[in-house]
Image (cartoon, rainbow, N blue to C red; front, side, top):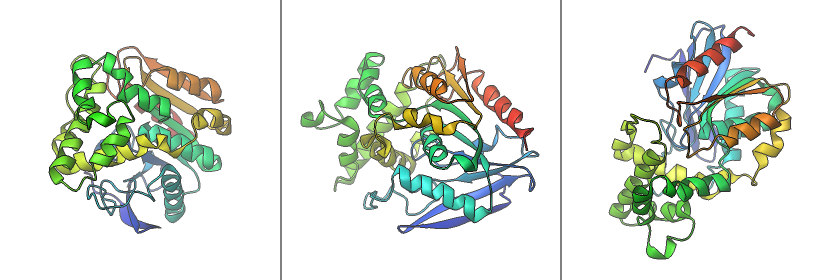
Length: 313
């Protein structure tokens, strides 16, 4: 990880300390990165799309993951104060803490959901948005990933479904896995984390040459990721169904670029398409050969969008 120019642990209340760091030009255009998962944390890879001679980039690990504390990989850590409204408030508190007036927001996958929730709550604090692998984490989207994608990967989905007790297999699979991840037996928790992350790595494997995510080989990462993903999915991001699409009018005046792969079957292209139609000033770039966060052109398109917005500083 490049050495940050500044870093710290922000006390956001509820016993939560959020890790943050700043990279790039001291007088560069402010930007904040919202990572995916939920629960993946921010690493150096999130700096690659930025020209750090022109941007001042803020990375943060969302509540409960990465270097933030307490880490939810400990199954005794309570998740009741880990919700989308809490994360939105944390982002705004960090902006104030760093003395940033307005900033560009970059978000991917789950981070795009969080970015939309933040920008709709605080539109006056957002200059532009660059979102890729766009999702809104609606209940329908969660059902699509946890059930309908079984039609694309039937063998792997049966293993995923059969990872929960028989009585739970026709119900909410995210909810069932969330319960297994706090089971008193550590072997049950570990198996649930392995099964959940194996399916996470499968349903995005729609692009030729897909390689498993090496992060899932780390037991500590698996547990943290699985707990937060199941927590947010079982609650459909703690948002009323369709709220982010209905609230897109609040983004009027905020330029946005949405980059999405047409081969991203687990997060279908109609999600960003509908969003772009409802958001004045948004531009959708659909990439024929790209999947969920992967593909030959995705990184280049995100980099180009950020370079274009850098000139507005």
